[in-house]
Image 1 (cartoon, rainbow, N blue to C red):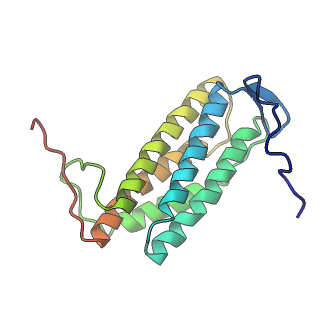
Image 2 (tube, one colour):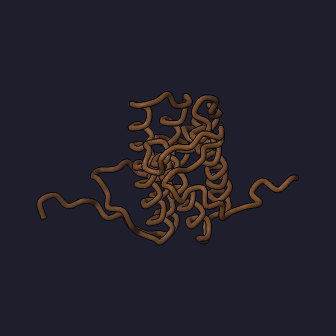
Image 3 (tube, rainbow, N blue to C red):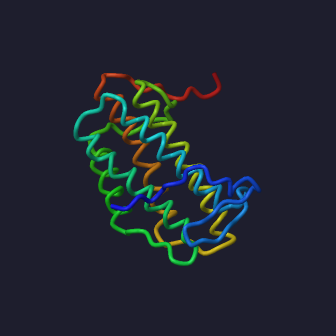
Length: 181
């Protein structure tokens, strides 16, 4: 395999622009770069979550999301030609349904937290929601690949369910929101 990134420090972004995969340059403050940045941050959080001691089945279900987020970022980096696999959204739908089926129904909103791994899931979930908002803002300005918004929506849903699953597996009780304390 040929080296793809031989020059990490290029200095081409010193003027406040960055290059997209199609060779075009855009402002680092553009909606597209904000969305790419949020997706990158989310992927980094999943990497942090994967450093935790996780059940093998959960690890195996979580690792593909990092690759899918790279594909999502790639679709954003190719404004005219970006594609995203619809099977990724279906995979998350199936995971959320499978994991949620093992959990008791929620009686009230729950506070983020519990075990460290579950808390990291909640941080990743919140970051996925921000990435989704950034992507929705971009979609109001430009065309984006089909499936990107549904993917981030499903990923945040699954991360919520996964946080509950991790807490339950560890015997950690959920803390319900107390109205008007």
